[in-house]
Image (tube, rainbow, N blue to C red; front, side):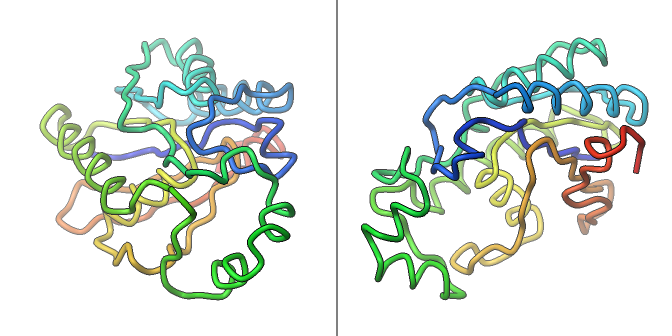
Length: 207
């Protein structure tokens, strides 16, 4: 199975550097444009056999835009929601730095996981994404290309879980809005074929 992980398009909170988490923010105008370019790229370059998405509207609208171009209805799954980020949701990063300076310094500098106040535990997030991945394996043939639209922290956990990484360490991935990430799971050892690809947003061409 080939897993094509996609981060949703841009929101105003992305631009403002606000912590989104499970707050249900919509795409902005640029995010809608990104979704259209992403959809055109996937329709032209990838033979998608199934499309899954978080039900949060920034992911849902991205998936629905893709669906119109590839002709496959999206399936929405709560397990793909963004990580709940606790009492910091809605705050700008600059405000977090002012309000929690010691925690912010540790969060920026530590190689180990540093919890946000009141956030969803990494193990709980991993349990829900592992459940989703297990279901995909039982539902789709080995050669299927499955597209999954979700969120930054959830994408990090999906990748870490597939690769067997220690989730108590800081995960190294960064996913831009409307990026494409391709993991080949057709063999015993998953292989990353594409990471944080946004070429389709810059010039409309394929990778």
